[in-house]
Length: 195
Image (tube, rainbow, N blue to C red; front, side, top):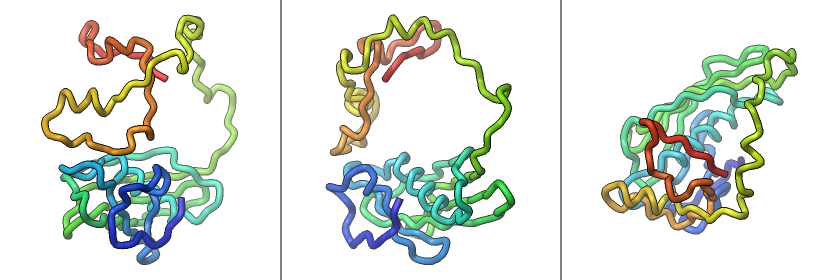
């Protein structure tokens, strides 16, 4: 991800990657916009993604990738103003780096995240999880054979308010194998296959 000047207006026509772009204010302080498509509150996924970009930007050791992330959404954010991301760097060890991020609006923390970065190392074969029985794959239609699911539209039918007015729904292409049963519960569980 890149870090550069965001301008003074929220990004309404930017693409997915551009929405993750941050403005670096200081070594560990970044400024980001929330998307303008949600009239009620900041979109949580974008806040989390921007926090991850801010944290990753401060990891200076080459080859370290995030391998663990814990996040908490504490309060709703405003879609009409900047979000400030403050990164704390508690540790940079020989093979791990740890970062904590606070997302702040109007002096109040709206989101916190803790992330750990590690070198990608080759390990013994026993560290790889065995794959489940793959015989079901032959019975599942290819993604192109399935209809697109406008998941945001389906969610808006079950939630109050108009908080799902995201103008760029093409960012997420979900195709359910049993698309007519997306919201059905079977034996107290939601078991679904999706591409």
